[in-house]
Image (tube, rainbow over all chains, first blue to last red; front, side, top):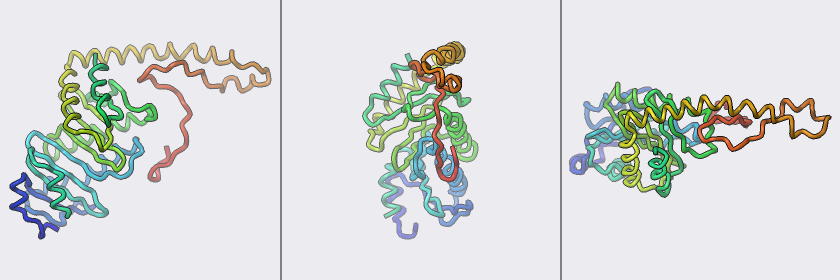
Length: 102
Length: 181
């Protein structure tokens, strides 16, 4: 999936890296080896975030956006895999997601 | 005071409700829609705490989350003292939401927090007193003598429940993803 992306171009708009993890936590694909720690939390936060919506009667979660002081991260659970990507705090995550997925 | 500040959030177009939890997961202020049963709030608080702790411990401290569900978005924000949860429509202006929730979080100082806890405690202490006269009044409106056998089962008249107070109500049997509530 990441073979077709222009990583340099994305880095100019704040992209740091992306990772796809399997439902068992294994790394399926990543743009960098440094993303393993980030990848390791994707499965669990997807589950917990999904459960937060449960009492509100919501369907399965589509996206989880995390914001820390300097970094933004997005986690997108798919059927058997979870896509996650990291960018800097000023990046437009929707733009980057669009580039990654399309 | 805090109600006025939270009202600024609720007035924003697209905001459907908000609640404030302390760091222990205790509900301090509830402005979620009325259809949301408070019975679920314990689980909700526990899950929110777990999400924050899991990411803090295993990755990095993140104070803000946006959970995008197909129907609604849930914005979670954390300050030193509280968690703020806001349920919004996807059409909401996220920048405005961030600005107005910044104000809420800024105003919840330890002093305000202790005031909110006192109000909560007072409401809890008043709750049994408010509930006790209700069963005594319940048999009164039952006119036919034949119905006396069912009188104890009659529900107390809902006399304007205070927000945040637990109101006993029949819970419909529901199933969600295989779990029966």
